[in-house]
Amino acid sequence: MPTLTGIDFLKSLSNPPKVILTTAYREYALESYELEVLDYLLKPIPFDRFFKAIDKYFKSVSTLNSQSSRIESTEDIPNYLQVNMNKKHYRVLFNDIIYAESLKDYVRIHTYEETITTKEKISVFENMLPPFFIRTHRSYIVNSKKITAFTNQDVELDDIEIPIGISYKQRVFELLKKT
Image (cartoon, rainbow, N blue to C red; front, side, top):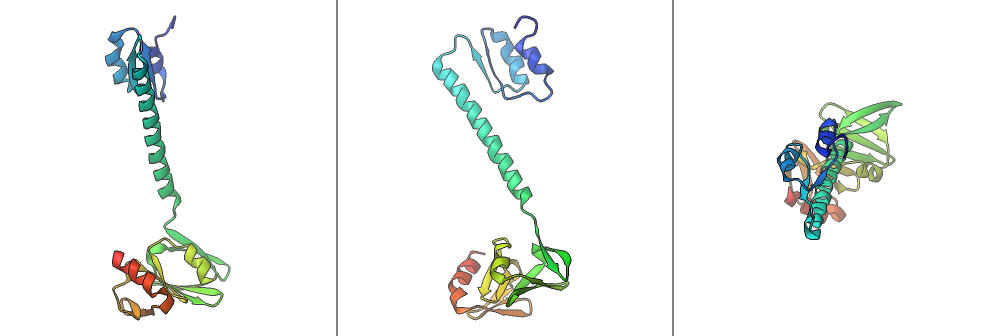
């Protein structure tokens, strides 16, 4: 480059991209690594060395993408549920929910602080919950983190007993044995 070296150009960037430097001069190698270049190729460049540098680039981009998607995915998942009751919107934290019960076309959500009833079928409500909630009965969903004991017939949430339905029994026991 006639007026500016590649290294000088890289230094001038506030947010430099991933760079693989190619040059015929060894003396820039140390300085290039201080600039966190991805790789440094000395001319003449053998094909296998070029291929290795390109592979290194794709691995670094893949790692960055998987890390950012993991961050986005955890940030995108709220830790609450928004429900309506009497034209009022409530934000209920998942960890505050003890259990939910079906009342035909309504769901009653029980927390230690309050009980909220919302117009929703329990099957739709179940799909809005994270995996640590367990459907124990056609009319009940419980927060597995709140279960203090269980038998063949019910789960206990402190002093509250919730029945285990016959068709849910096998699935409930599988999930409870994992936790």
